[in-house]
Image (cartoon, one colour):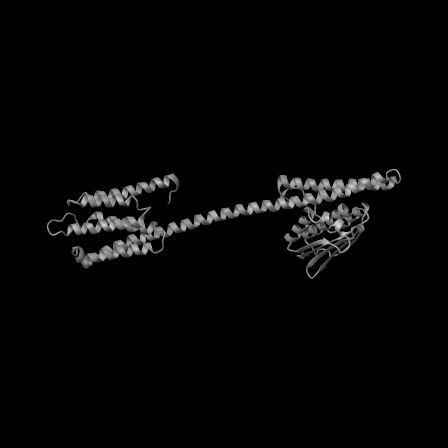
Length: 397
């Protein structure tokens, strides 16, 4: 168990104080003049073993050397050696192994302690330290040191694993948040394209029909009546589409299998419907659809329909009545090719192109095609008119 937060810090501080008290209590059992001082300094340094493990180990080892030097004084030993409070060396080594952030420090700490215990069998003549351990005792010291080192290394490995798991969880959470934001952005872009397609096309048709009905109302009531019917039909379709979009905003994109109302599917057959309304608005529209039945997915049919619809909307807005439009859709080697060309009603490119050089319509068509993995091209024709070409890879059902 690894406590965290304020409780974890309190437990860690209590453990540090407990370790220091153990070393200090062990030093009180010895009667040397400097045993209590050396043990107290070792205990005090262990309080900082989590933040400065390498420094604490160096201080404890230096105090241990001083302890043995004072023990081997020729006149009177001023400290006891070895002593039970030397367990501070093992605590310091364990802190280095467990809390060190470098890969080589745990091995260096273990090697230093093993070397220090090995000197007990030969002594350090340069410092006046005589041998204090038999070879048999050295095996006990080394066994204890290795046991402590392996325990600390296991804890160190577990801590690194826990930190890596926590980092991975945080990374996964950030990725999930990013995916949610991207999905929301894509949904907003899709709704914006749908709104533009519905409103722009429907209003363009209705405005032209209304103008035409007003112009022929007295001279040809039958033509005015036909225009009004087209306006009503276009308005009803626009309202249905707006209701669907608003329902998506309120409830999410549910289908009938989830208990929600069925979504209206747009097929290539509806290209004839919008073409007929464009003809009623005064355009000359020639449509050719050479795509086998069932060769396109619903998303591909929706994309193709929206592109044609937007092209007709642009012709109505910028070229007006009297323009001719040629629409060609055909499948070639697993690719749906869409080609829409208009003559601009005879207007020169310089006059007609300016209105179509930008805007949400071309941006929306390009986004739809790119989302489907296709290519999009649009621009003015030589002389007059405009052309739109799109290629969309198909996924045969």
